[in-house]
Image (cartoon, rainbow, N blue to C red; front, top):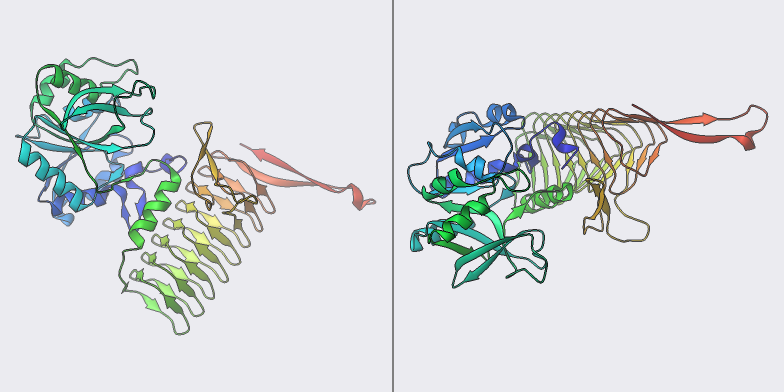
Length: 420
């Protein structure tokens, strides 16, 4: 998720007006689960400041800090003094709806295994923990097998219901070759000990948020279901075709044309004379200038998109300033799907349209342009007339250096320079 997670925990990235993890907290509440322990570490104060004790969401939230990031089993062990009996464990970067959570809880209540593991079927199980399952009972878990070694196509989803026996197994679990305490090793010990580890294959879909374009896809998913609620001001002459959420203190100015579902936070200034296309999310204190077009994008708090700019299928961080005439392209010339660099490897997003990913505090110069799939790190500046084809790291400046001779314009040329 970098550069988006350089300044925020992944679970606090905004989707349709809420941090990712809030969707799970609300679903748990709606299933009757109100005692919640959040295991935190990275930028934990941001989580604590936002949710506090949970009372605003009608739940009770407790926090514990995982001192070292040494595996899921270690993280689960922090709950031993918190739970009295059976308890549910979720990864923070997946989103489950209430119906799915309720079906998981009902499955556990019906069969009362020692552990219930939620499974999903995939085409290629080789990157996952794959289960050998017979009559819904898990006999073995194989981590990242070859295709020939994979016992099935059902893989561990990272959603569990445990009883307290799991803590005994975690206490005996040794570090893996990765230097982590793996929960799957603890589960293998349960299986060897004759405990019942049951698999639950659900036909209900959950949403996994692991890469930047998945944030756009989940934003699309939630915005499609919003209803119109206007708490700000819509000036005469604005045209709205679709459902919108407009926060307090926000203004949609005359000449603005909105199509599809759009979420606009508090104290935003939209327009005049701009085109906002669904499914677009604006955080709080966002300014969109005259004759701007924004499509299917996430624009985070305190960001300005100034006049005559285009932003398509992109994620723009907080406190960014997009200068006049900036163009963020979202479509390749060859119409192929857009690839994006993640951990020094080009990954196919599967999306035909995907724009740029900006971290926080990015500034662009007038008439700058960005190719599809480009990432720009935090606190970086892209100067006027730059056409950025490749990723730019954090705390960089790139600008056009013009070199010319006074007497012969044919010798004029432009070069690019990046400054740390």
